[in-house]
Image (cartoon, rainbow, N blue to C red; front, side, top):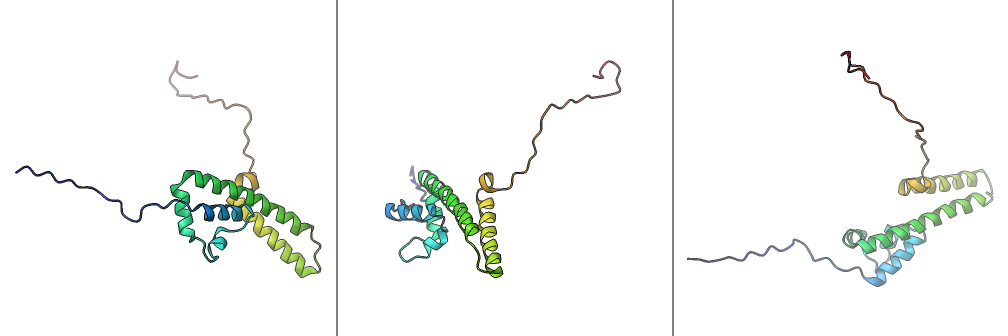
Length: 142
């Protein structure tokens, strides 16, 4: 008896859905304004944040667009820091509140984009390194 069984393996879970263009554009504009993704996701009719992260992990071009939107959003947040700092406080409490707002934004920017907004730690090395090995064996010492 020669019976061949054709076994087809099916992927577990739902098939990947394409990123809805209307939601994608709205979300990218939102992110480029420096607003948080989860805040966008909490609005009625928007996608859940896990769906957005699935889109990002499955669609490389969408991931690049999200990265670019976030980069633009980081610059908006940095501009907000300048605006907050340039606003004259009404009293001592307002000064502390403004300082907290600026510090929070700057710390988040340093975590999100350390190359651009993080503190630079200087570990510059100039010159060369010379190594001389002494073995104690005649004729092999450098």
